[in-house]
Image (cartoon, rainbow, N blue to C red; front, side):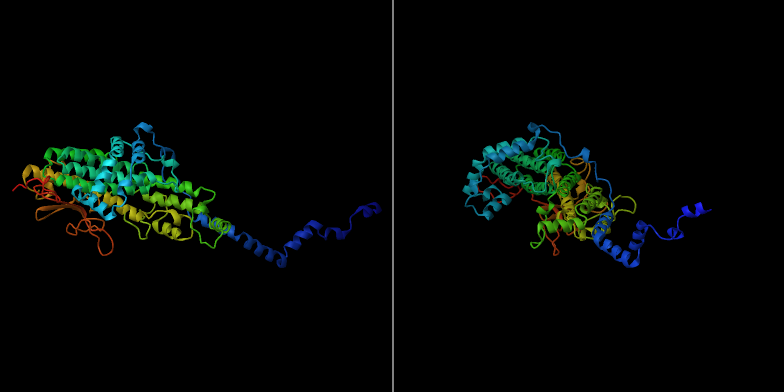
Length: 487
C-alpha cells in the first residue's frame, strides 16, 4: 500500500490545465477574443467585399465560341485590304491644299459640275491611286487586322485615309456621267459600293459604322446616276444585280460585336490597365490599382462583359420587328423571357454597370449602334427599290402607283421594312414628278416621307431616297453636256 501511495500523482495535478490549454483559454476570454475578431473583420473586410462584389455577377460561359472566331483564313493576294493599303501609299492629298472644305463638300454632294479646277487636278493626280484601290474592290474579302489580334489602342489610319479614296471614286463616277459615259460611271459606283462592304468586314464596331457611312455616300451617288435619262432599263437591271452581289459581301452585325468583345476581353486581361483608364488626376497609379482591386476589377468587369454581350448577340442580327423588346436603360439591352438566357436580366446588368468598374469606360453604347444597324439595313433595301422603280419608269413611262406593281416582272418579292411592324413593307409617296421610297425610320412612325430630316428630339424621321423623274436633268449641267428634255 505504501508503494502505491508513493507513485500516485497528486490530486491537484488533474485539476490544473496544461500550459498550452491555459494559453488557449486566455485567448478565448471575451475581453481578448472580441477585439481580435473585430480587428480581423476590419482587416479582411475589403477582401470579403471584393469577393462578394465579384460573385454578385454570376460567372457564365463565353458569349460565343472563341476558338471558332477570331482568325480569317485568307491569302494576302486575295485580301482587298492589301490593295487598299497600296492605294493609300499612292494617294496624294496636296490637291486639297487651299481648297475650302465647303467647296469640296459641295462637289462631293452635288457632282462634277460643281468641282473647281484645283479639285479636278487633285482627281487627275490620284488616278494611279484610284486604279490600285479599284483592284481591291473586285475581291471578295477584306481583313485589316485579324480579329484576335486587334487591340483598343490600335490605330485605324488606313481606314480613315481611305475615306478620301471613296469620295474620289464618286467624283470620278460623276465625271464619267457628265461626259456621257454611263457604263464607266456605274463601274465607279459599283466599286464604291463594294468598298463600303469591305470596310465593314472582319472588324470592330467603328469599322462597321464607317462602312455604313461609306455606303450612304455611295447610295446617294447611285440614285443620282439612276435619275439620269441616259441610263437605260438594261443598265439599271445590271446595277440592281450588282447591288445584290455586293450584299453578299456583307458580314453579320454579330461579327462586329464579336470583334469588339475580343478587343475588350484582351484589354481587361492587361496588367497595366490603369494606363488606359481615365482616372482622376489626383489619384496616383498605385492608388488607382489598389482601388480597382478592392472593387473586384478586372474580374468584375470581365464577368459583366460576358453578360452584356450574351444579351446583345442573341438579337443584333434580327430586324427590329423580330428583336426582343428593348429594356429600360441607356445600354440598349433586350428584355428576354425569364430563364431563356444565362445572362442576368437587363435591369441587373444596368445596375451593375452603373457602379464603379472598368466596364463603364469601355462598353459601347449599343442602343445607338442598334439604331445605326437597323437604319443601314433599311437604306440597303430602299436603294434596291429605288432602282426597281426607275426600271419600271423606263418600261412603263410613269412611276408605279404602288410598290406591288414592281412584282413579278422586276422584283419577285418586296423586302420587309426592318424598322416597321411585323414584316410590313416599305412605303412610297409621289410628290409632283418625284417619288419618295422610304422606311418608317427609327421612331417606327410614317412621317410622310420626310427622309433625312431630324425630329425635335434629335432622332431621324423616315429613311429613304427621293427619286427624280428621269426625263429631267437630275442636277444643273452645262450646255455642252445637258441632254434634251423629253416631253
